[in-house]
Length: 124
Image 1: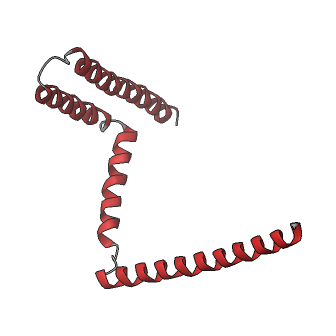
Image 2 (image 1 turned 135 degrees about the vertical axis):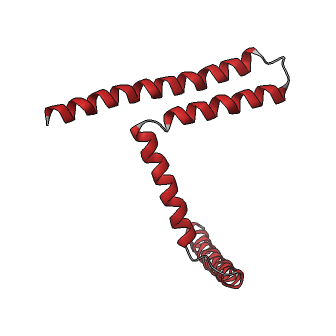
């Protein structure tokens, strides 16, 4: 038990170092983009993308990064299993929602008019 928890602490320590390196890389990329603002925009964008790819690659080597990657892969699989509505179903639902919005707007307008008439007749 003690050796397992010691391994977790050491792994977490290395994970924090990896996250620190990834954040430092991103910060240096932002600083480099500002520092080299007179250079070509294309070169700066390519540099930023390269730095971001390396930083994400380092972050994915951590336990939390691997868990996030697994979550993203599972989410993509879930999205593929979703049964999306057809165009006709979407159109019918949209028409129903718009009709109900108009009905409730009319009801609220009538209530507002009635209350306004009532208050003006009470006040004078």
